Image (tube, rainbow, N blue to C red; front, side, top):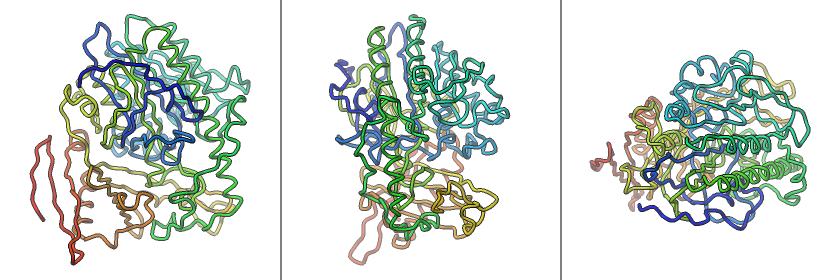
Length: 541
C-alpha cells in the first residue's frame, strides 16, 4: 500500500458524545483501524493510545445520533482490570493471570508486578528511546497498600500520573511519579478527564523534539459515578437507552444468571438505566474535548503528521439487554465489542478492514509500528499492521479467537436479597445480580466472511453451553446449541480447549470451521480448513 496524502484527517462536523469519532479519522470495520508501516524517517513515529472506561459501541456509546457504520474491536474479557492487563501485555487472561478487579484476583498484585507487568509493551518502547507518558486510570487496585502503594511506578514509564484505585471524577488521589497527590472537588483543578488532558498537553510542550513519544491517556468516562463536567450536565436531556435488539428480552434459553431478571423490567429500573445512559454520554463529552485539544496541540507543534492516535475502551456495557439493568461481564456483543479508531500519517480516509481484531493485538501492533521485532515479545496477540498495509507486511487474518471471564461472588448472601443465597455479586435493589462465581465461561468466536458463530461453555454444575449464529441472529436471542449438528459442536469444543491452553505462538495457529450447509434432509455438511502459518489443507468430514 503506497503512502497516501494525509489530508485533514479530522471531521468538520463534531458530534458531542462521539468521543473522538469526529475528531479522529474514522475507519469503520469489524475492527476500525488503519496503520501504515512508517516510511523510514529521521525520527520514528509518535503514538498516542486513549483507553476509555466501559465505553460500549453496540448501543451507541461511540456515536450519538447519526450512525455511519460500526466501528469496533473485541475485548478478550469484558471486565476492566483483566482487559487492561491484556492491553498492556498482549496476552489472554489465562496467561497474564489477572482474573478480576480484586487483589486476590491478581489485579495489580505483587505477582502481576513481578511477572507480566515487567514485560508490558511500554518497557520495550522505553528501550527504543521513546519518551513515555501515562495519565489516568491504570488498574483497579493500583496504589493500594498491598499493591506497592503510590510509590510503585511500573517499568517503562518516564512520566507517571496514575489514579489510585477505580474511576473517579473528583475526590481522588494520584501517584505523580511515585508521590501521592490528593484532589478535591474543584472543577478547574480536579476534574480528572480535564486534568489528564491538560497534563498531556504540558508534556507535549516540554518533550524533547529529537525523540519520539508515546502517550497512554485513560480517562474515567463513561464509568460510574458518571459525573459530567459543569458545561455538559445539561447535554442530551431527552436521550434514552436504545429499545431495540435484545433490550428487555427474556433470557429464556441462556445461563441461569440471564434467566433470573424480572421481565418486563419495572418502571423504576427503566428510569434508572435511562439516567445512567444519559449521564454516560455527558461524561464522554469531555473526552471529545480531550481528543480535539490533543489533535490541535499535535498540529501546533508540527507532530500531527508523524503521530498515530489509537482510540479504544477496555470493555463494553449493557443497559437493559436481556433485562439486565447496567454492567458488563457478559459474553454477548454489547459487552465484548468496543470502539477502535486510528488516525495517522498516510492513512487514507474511510479505509475499512474486514477482520476480527482483539485488544491483545494493540501491543504487538504498536511495537510493529515502532520497528520492534514482535517475535521477541511474549504476546498472544498479533500485529494487524499486515491487514492495513499488506504490501509492507505478510500475515493472515485471525479466523477465530477466545473470550474468557472468571465470575465473582460473595461468600455470604446479600442482606437485601437473602433468598438468592451466597455466591453472587453486583446485585441491584430489585435483586437482579450481574455476576456470580459460576458465571465463569470461555467462548470461541469464529468470524470470517462466510460465518459468524459463538460457542460458550460455563464452569458450573449444569455444564451449560450457549451457541449463536450471529449472521441470522445478530442480537443473540436464540441459543441454538440443541439445534446444531453434534459434529459442529465437537469442532467448536476442541477449538475452545486448544485456545484455553494456548500461549504465545500457539494462540496464532488456527483451525477454521467454514460455513456449514443444510441439505434437504436438514443434515449438516462441514468443511474444515487448517491454516498453519498461511498454508492451507482441506478435507471433508
